[in-house]
Length: 113
View 1 (cartoon, one colour):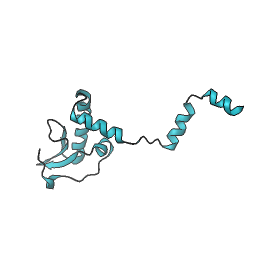
View 2 (view 1 turned 30 degrees about the vertical axis):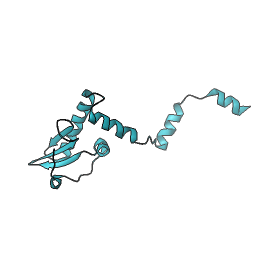
View 3 (view 1 turned 180 degrees about the vertical axis):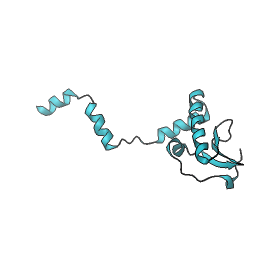
């Protein structure tokens, strides 16, 4: 699908849309959101506003990811993006986790001797 560069909307994306960065563009009286080369093989959403288009796209992305196989190009792309995101745990969350981690009794015994 050839999208006219002048129709592309520069909008701040949040959540999954920020991570996957689909193209948001105006098409007639509607706004569209596309991840992939075309609506048939990618994920497409539309709405009366750019925000509605992204919301529709997110719904369609969830449907696509649950129904497509592992060899699907969108699935492969999403997995690659997820793998590239650093696993950063905020300190307050880490402190909470640490409260419930099992204690290695052997380490305690060795340090007390």
